[in-house]
Length: 280
Length: 299
Image 1 (tube, rainbow over the protein chains, first blue to last red):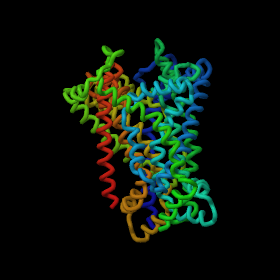
Image 2 (image 1 turned 90 degrees about the vertical axis):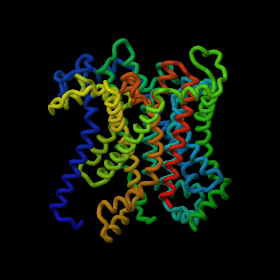
Image 3 (image 1 turned 120 degrees about the horizontal axis):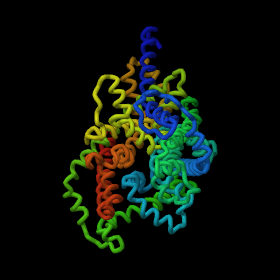
């Protein structure tokens, strides 16, 4: 506030320079993928450093969108990822609340237990998981992979929700209880809305778990009409000759829904706490 | 006082609400993780491999003994620690740094936010392969850019340490946006009043960061860091794809890629299961030590 204009100008320059360094770092490899997607024919290697290749063409995008079952893959992926996000966030917002507000017996052990589920190399769990899923007839169903993804995403989501609830003063809920709200209403109407930033983080995380997962999907979803985007893209790479341009174009398209989702969600990365003027 | 009141309430009224809140999560985790885990523990005491595929037999601790006598065991273990440590430092450093920058009122902030999460948005499979392409000796843009600066081409994927460095850089790129998103969320729970009060007390930017921002970020950042450690330790994709299954000469493996090769290239399931149990116990130990350190700091 009291900084002199020259100093403020310098700090502006610094901040922008840093932001641009970050942007360069994160975007350059993506531009490589965009570049491959625009090349005519399936050239993977070139010594040309230009960002847009000499005879750029959108053929690959046309091929991906119209000649491949891309809409099917997209539909399956959207279904799987959205369900994973909705179920994951719901379960985690409840479990995290219990961990944050209640001191039941075995609480510490249960919190640890949730972490422990992540420690065993996941690929080794695949075979026995397949056997269970076959027993309950969930192999080759989208529900089967959703359950597997929810289990993958839950530990992080539960811990994050618990951590965020911990920063919200209990007094607010007490006030609601005194005003006659039920215990569940106090949670639903007071604490949950204040936790919007944590819901955004866990929602995005669960969505991404389903969106980019490949190994579980390959084992659990043999039928082509149930393939998700990562499986579909991989099928382009395993035919006789990798269709690099199509592959790259598909990957660029896969990014778009995630970026849109993040932009929509980041509006809610604003806490109710800082808006409400309640001091912890 | 008040906290005690609400807590007692959650347990008494509404028939143990806490239990109902936990039940669905517990059910899913038990279904998907518990049985496969026990199955692997059982398998680790057998000689299940391609020669005994139909008739695996109990062989006690043979697999574990074999594992400890593996000549590469120590180097793979140390490389895994190095891999986890370096990645984590950069993920948290870059992620929190980017979050602090993007938390300021910048013109074009939504655009920057969107651009910075792109590494997370792209499927890991394709970005790992893209980075592998970028480290190509003749055609990779890393060497082409070095060439423009007059620096000689580096055979990134040809040496064990350069291949490891290439995979590490790839994973740093992949992982920092996640920490950034978590930190952006965490920054929202810090009331602006705290900073104002600190400013009035004459605290400088660095002091405000260490005394307010970091401690207030801790509850949200801790799970991301603990789980990030576990995920990085067990990250199969990046090393596997960037170094093409541990090349050159299986010298760039970390524990989990080593296991993957044992299980799915050589079909040594029992051995791979024992190795996985070892990984599990190692991680468990690391997390315990970490949590003990974090607890001590809190008091």
